[in-house]
Length: 258
Ligand SMILES: C[S@@+](CC[C@H](N)C(=O)[O-])C[C@H]1O[C@@H](n2cnc3c(N)ncnc32)[C@H](O)[C@@H]1O
Image 1 (cartoon, rainbow, N blue to C red):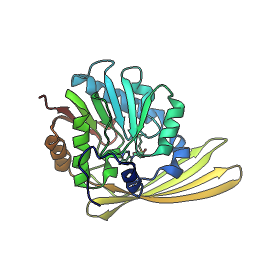
Image 2: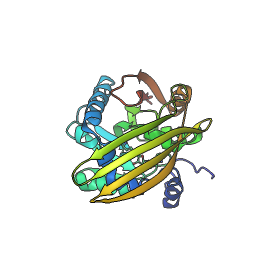
Image 3: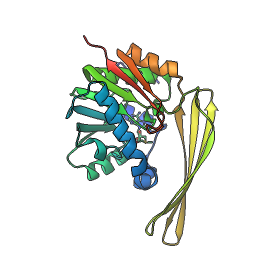
């Protein structure tokens, strides 16, 4: 695929990225399975602290990239003017239903072009990994820089790093009267810098059980690749946060003034 210059936000291109990250089927039960208050609340609270520590003003403009169903929005919306952006119409439809007052945009991390500037832009829960290649990581960082006010702050959580990655099998379940889900996820190295996550979901409704299997590819970048992608985009890394309350840790950078 030929990369277009930044800002080439053409609808046809969005389609191409679904082969890496199609949340269409998963969206219906994404919140039940993944959006847990005990993880999202402390994570959002630490993110707010980090943004404030690096000069993001109270009630500033915050863009949440790859916002999904808006899992972090309840924890941000009283502190910032929040907007969200995601590649999946299905995830966005759920976010819009939950937060009708928040602006959600359909767009791709690597070429989004909004007519707005922000005091802070965050990309959480390792979603940046869906860009898959270093070229696209760099493109995404350039788009982030282009949407930040001078001195604005970017906070990006890596989807693991080359240095820290471990293969694993994740096991979890939802057991509610109206919804029962058992999930296993195989997290394996497919190529030296590409992780394949294969979702196996058993979905129970009444006494029926449906099986959903899906694989997604995620880019595994090194610490150096994250830092240099930000640096090249004009975002100076000012902190590398390693606390476990922010899943994956965080690179915090400031858009260079001028
Ligand atoms: C694992 S979900 C995380 C959602 C949200 N950040 C959260 O923590 O709940 C990953 C999200 O990234 C979105 N995504 C994947 N690739 C993307 C891209 N290239 N541009 C924008 N969003 C993307 C998916 O549609 C999905 O909603």
